[in-house]
Image 1 (spheres, helix red, strand yellow):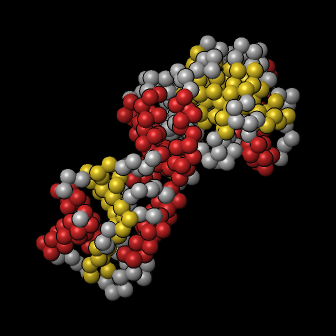
Image 2 (image 1 turned 120 degrees about the horizontal axis):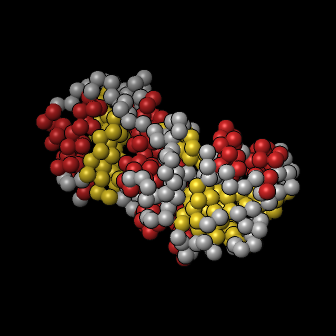
Image 3 (image 1 turned 135 degrees about the horizontal axis):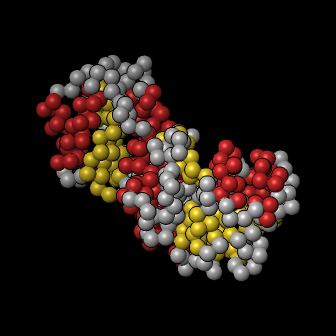
Length: 388
Ligand code: FEO
C-alpha cells in the first residue's frame, strides 16, 4: 500500500475502512477512511493517525516514501480514537518525536493513553516552522470535540481540517474530482447531519476564518480531499450551519396496524399537493441516520407513532432521542398518530419536539382507523390553519 501525493512532498498516508457499516449508530453504508497526512520537510511531520486496527496500513504507506522513524513531529488535531488510535504504537517507534496538540488535546490524549509523550501545546494562530514550510494552528473547539483544532499550511495553501468537511466514504480515489460529485455531496451532508449539526454555532463562528484563507486543498480526516469543489462545500457548510431549510417535509413514522401509516400518507399527499417537497420515511424501512440527512434541509419535521402500552413505539422513541441530540433549529414540528384507548403517544412526541425548540403545528390524532376522506379534509384544514 502506497502513499498518495497531494502535492510535492505532502502525502496522504491514511487507512481505508472498507467494511465499516456502523459508526456509533451512524450507518456508514460506504465505509470510511481515516486520513493521516505526511509532510516531508526539514522536520518530517505526520498529521493525525488512524484507528488502531489500521496502524500497519498507515505505516506501510509512510514507508513507501520515507522511513517512519524519521518522523520528528506529530500533529494531533483531534483526540477521538478514529484519529489518535494509531498514536500509542507510533510513539513506541518514535519516542523522541514531539506531539503538537491543543491544551484539551493534551489532556484528552493523556486521559486516553496514559502516556507522557513530548507534548507541545499550541494556541490559536501559533505557527510551527517545518523548514521550507510552516503550519498555522487554529483551535476549533466542538467541531467535533472540545480538543479539536485545524492546521493550515500557507506555502501550499492546504487546510488540514480534521472532522470538518469530512465524508464517510471508503474508496481508492483520494480527490473530489475522482468520484461522482453527487455521491460526495450526499455523504458530506449525511456526515454534517449526523455529526456536525449540534455544533453548528461553532461552525458558524469558525467559517469566516476558513473563508479568509487562500485555499487550494482542504484535506479532511474522512473521505476524499477537496481540491475542485472547495467553494461548493464551504457554501453548503454555511447553509447547514445557519440551519437554512427548504420547503420540504420529512414524515417519520412507525405503525402497528397501518392507521398511523394512513395519517402519514395523507400528510405526505397534502404537503406534496401544496408544492412542498415531501419525504416519506418509515422507521421500518429507513435508518435514522439516513432520515437525518433529509431532516438537515427540511422545514417541516412530522413524527408519528401509535400508542403502545401508554407509550410511543420504541423505534419512534429512539428516533426522537437521536433527533434531540442532533438538535436542528428553525423547524416546524408536527406530531401525529393513531390510538385505541390511552392515546398518549402524540402528546409525548409533541413534548420532545417542543423541547428541541420546534414551532409546533397542530397535532393530528385518530382513534382506531381513520376515515380516508374525512382524514384528507382534516389534514388539509390543519395544515392550512398552520400556514395562516
Ligand atoms: Fe472523526 Fe470526531 O472523529
